[in-house]
Length: 384
Length: 130
Ligand SMILES: [Zn+2]
Image (cartoon, rainbow over all chains, first blue to last red):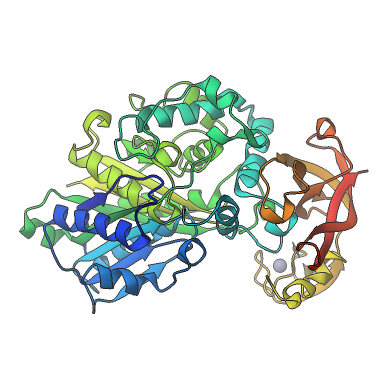
């Protein structure tokens, strides 16, 4: 297997981008990544998109985007693993370069979510759960994570305030990220007084509906050295699945797919949780970040809430989690999220993260999750 | 809108709680599977799930999906049946203040939702206090 480097990253301002189409958003972002890498052609394009069909009525987006990126006839593939589609695109790009099947790959993610109304968006997102045995009964994604949250509170004594502190921390970080959808701070009180969506989760526990894209350019480390680019290596890649229905899990509070994906990524990179300097995780809901830090082995089982309260995962803490603002403040265009996590880690490892720079960051990890944890993709990055 | 076939092919599970029990290791799959996730055996016998159990976790859906707008707010939970199988469903005929982890509930056959004024009416299982 060849060593793989990220040589270019691109992200544009996320939000409700009513004036821009899916193809515009993606191409603008992809061009930034190509410019950052200093290349104008690629061997392969991989695009993560959860549900372009339901959000904009367009399938076959791999071909569409290769076309609008001026790259036909390169091979292009769209990959889907619900909200982990972006992480999966990165992994597929990694595999293509590592295997020698392609030299330069653009791995991107995109979702254009505001062309439909709220009910249609809820429906599209709901398709990541079991349509016949969860959605049929009236559950929603906030509802599924609320079921996890209450179980976690009951089992480990996690508090309502600790959940709120995840959102507050991520907005603190997001206030330093000009590309974030919501680059401002919030307070624990504002979270606790925001409208209930699915008890105990309130609207400020939830990541938003977002239009956005992110892209990275990958090549072999050998080629990156010739291009004389700052090199960030991908040294670990892991992916795993779990039952699609939350109710089928042995422990509702435990994200086994994240644990398994991380185990593989740690093994490939030869790293342990304590070797990681900075982490971007899938905080689609505040409780998710708490469960993920536990499943990644960053904190003990059941101690995720306490870790936030003690500032362990804050920007200045021992293990900064979601320096970018996370899904909560940065936004969550589902297919783009996993790639944007990689963009943040690469910027941090290059020392280009500006006011939210984590000092001495040498090893970073991304965790991108689909549905209620039915799939996870984990990557480990190192400064060369 | 889905065709009726999408609905009626789930009837053995939604109306009769039919599950598959692995003949090799006893794992109960609901809905039934072709292969046992525990031991990979492919021989199953059809069994009927227990009709009561206890609430493992619950929530109150206040922002519902479109087909459920006229029902919100409503309670949903994951219930562990007495045979160990866990199901997601609505908890009805129960004040929200009475919801509690560990509370006993039983399964009843109820209307789940309907497609508009003249569309298909969907039925299935819900949980009510025992
Ligand atoms: Zn078996």
